[in-house]
Length: 225
Image (cartoon, rainbow, N blue to C red; front, top):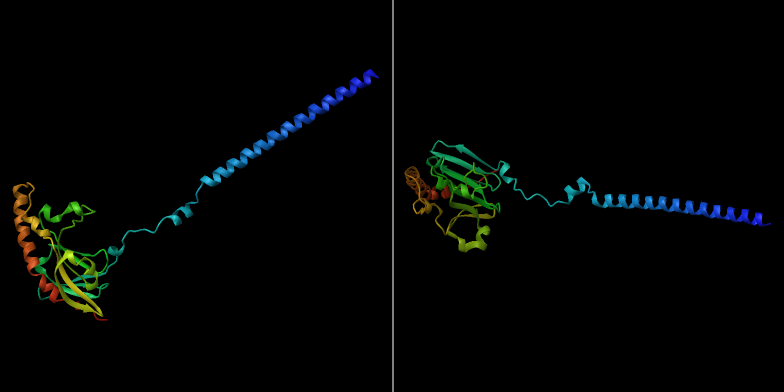
């Protein structure tokens, strides 16, 4: 009888140990699965779909209008160059004597154009204000723009004059309240003799362009279909 009890006791102990091992293995397996699940979950939350990244970025603010051919230049027999701006809908006659000494840029609000003087001196090129050293900014001369575009900044413009219309849109010419080209003769920086000589030449050319600006304004003409 005692022997039977001892045998049953041993069997009970073996069964208990077996269940314990199975439970332990199950816990280890479950824990491993839990770690794998958490790992996958973390990878999923940290990974970003490249397509979604591109789509979630704000729209590009780069102005591409400069790459679109909205203006053109054609030589005329009368000593002028015909400038045509198809986007704004007008043309101008620009004296050939200005050639190589000016730059035309469309205004940031796309309501008009600005004329800049670019001479031989480094001062006239105004490279410091240009985004591209190979494309000088130049010194501001005057503008042609829609009348409505200057209504909010009238204190910054001078010599406003109506020069024509495109449809129902009236265009005006104007200059700034500051004399940008005056830096050619009022430059406080020390320059060498060559730059000093070029500054004098540039002042003569810039002054001539500024004085003859009315020739351009008077030539304003609406483009016809």
